[in-house]
Image (cartoon, rainbow, N blue to C red; front, side, top):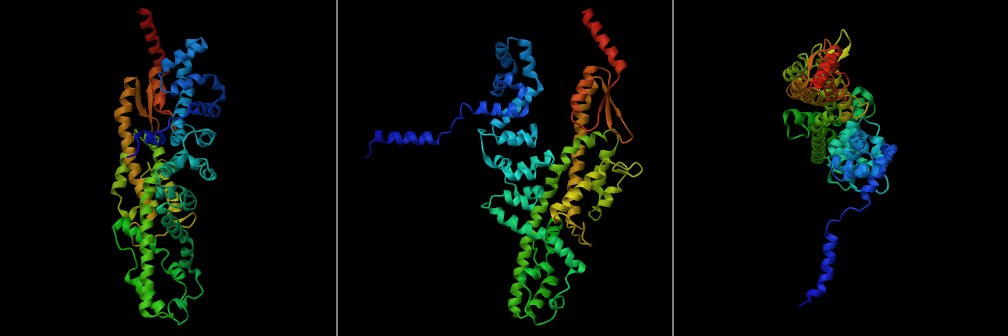
Length: 490
């Protein structure tokens, strides 16, 4: 029997190796130094205060400790509540935890790279690896919400979403080659989307050689890939649409496509049974490509909404708040039949969507931007839309933009309108701010009769593209005088 005392050292070693390791003592100090230098080197003297706050202590506790060093409690209290100091603390906390998406939200792409990729910064993972790679430069110039969604997709290994946001070429440089979806997405989507331009040219009459051979003749047949490219390269889009809209399951060749295929190979030096096998194989290829494409396209509405529409919902809702524009858009979208999920329908819906007289758009530009981006995401940059007259809707683009710029946008504005009515408006009214229409479109503005209410309003609508607060200076001065008189009387 083994001596238990001889087993003790190895067991202790195993326990030590398997136990979670505590962060190095100087890790937080490194993070603080990097963040302070990146955000504002002039705040270097606040370093002890930042460290105290980042360790989770209260502002009052940290202010007291900082005051002992500064010998000035007022300065310490002011520094502890300073917005820039609080921002630095939030960045330090996020960076120290390796939450790089939060760091992006708090800063921007330039500072994100500067902070995440500095020597000694903790953590690793796919997000940091991407941010600190040369590939990040290809997306760093995009709008922050788009970059955020790309990082979220990488974090959660949502490769379909990543392809939609970054495009197949860049996405396939990011997706690990050992990932099970890598081959499927990068080969199938890249090939299907990349084939659109050539297929549309062929459909326009670009094929001038061997056209007769496609029907008659005893010459050797063209390659299977060439036949597929000439005859079936647009069919994945049709089949994907049939699956998404109508729930079609079998996505291979229909008899009207299979029979000519068999006849061609049968008449070009293949036996009949061999020709049938060839066309069955091509049908299986079509089914696979259409299935992958359908799975991909089904992710696009939410992807586009999160990256490009959600950040606009608050502005657009506030700018229609005092009219029926938000409700009218929801009714319009809900009642629109699939055959009218078109750009023209969204353009001519009603003046609140696009005012032809003024040339102003509050809502149509959301659809227009969706159509532009969805075109690239589905068909490839600058390739053109693959439409199928007779189908409702006629294209995957129309389906996608109806879902994103139609349904999701309308529902989000309704929820935002309810938030303003239930939470924001009562609070501001109680603070002495009355809502009214700022223009004919119905943009809301709260007119406040006191300075504190005006400050609350401005804080509530901070970051909006239009001003939604005003102040009645005469009433505010009168209110201030009454408050001063009350204080003096007390």
